[in-house]
Image 1 (spheres, chains in turn green, purple):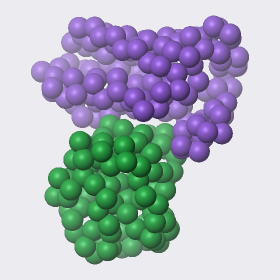
Image 2 (cartoon, chains in turn blue, brown; image 1 turned 30 degrees about the vertical axis):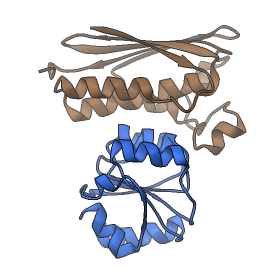
Image 3 (cartoon, one colour; image 1 turned 30 degrees about the horizontal axis):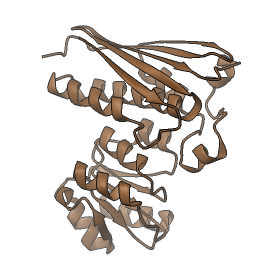
Image 4 (cartoon, chains in turn blue, red; image 1 turned 90 degrees about the horizontal axis):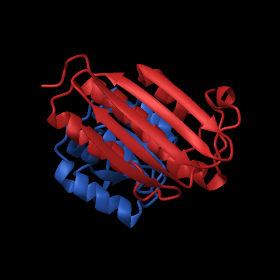
Length: 110
Length: 141
């Protein structure tokens, strides 16, 4: 399943990184602790978090994640979106909670 | 090959720069992706530790056909009890750093789990030094 498919199926907002919408999603990871994601997320995962600052993109890029999904209607920082565009890793958004998003994403790709 | 990167304490905007550069280089050299992952986890955690805890620091990377050796030396408060710092969940990070999702006491254990050799030394009041070696297992193209 591609990033663009989950955007459509979960009704996600695409904040930035449109270039990466064709990336393949291998699974998901939900956490707000950056070291946890660094240590445990898998390459190609979609990462669900309420963290919105730029370091999120450093993690996403270093761990080859396919997308970041920001939950609870939070808005990513401008520098986060700039780096997302630079890296071609989409930052997506939803008003759903991390729990709600995780459940729906798991149903789709789990 | 050897490389040096400087790290400034408190500068979260550039945290991960050295890790990103090293990752690109290893990719270009054709190093196996699971080994690159381990290098990146170790280096990023160590780099962020300097940003989160120290005043400044230097990262030295030495790469040869067999290993990548990463030495990170900082000027900072040091670690009074290394054994305690190595325990999962123990952290002295500030509330601001924790709010960003850092400082969960997972950094040093992550390094330990991913390095082939990991030596940490510290002098309280002066700084901390990390030496991390990861075997490239002849995967350099």
